[in-house]
Amino acid sequence: MKACLDLLTAKRIFHYRQNSGALKTERGGFVRFGAVGVPDIIAVINGKYIGIECKVGKNKQSEGQKEFEVKLKKAGGDYWLIYFIDELLLKLS
Image: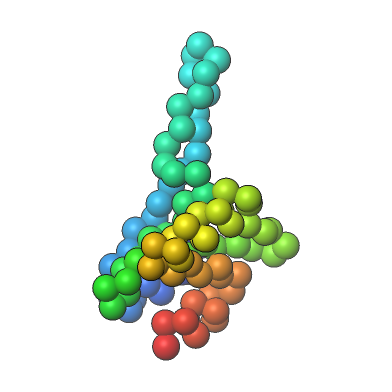
């Protein structure tokens, strides 16, 4: 993910890291932050919203991430699943 963030920065592409997850409260409940399945990085390239999900090795998308991808594409955005920095370089060229 750091390599992807560094590349986007070097290319002066507007982007930000999007964190999501949940924290357990003292009372045993959970507080969720971020949307379920949201990609690791949000970028806007040529006016288009791009969700970039970074994976390593044999890691795969969760069901929530797959659902987010479908919804984002239906809304007109794009979703890139990146395993290697070369994949991101190719998409940006």
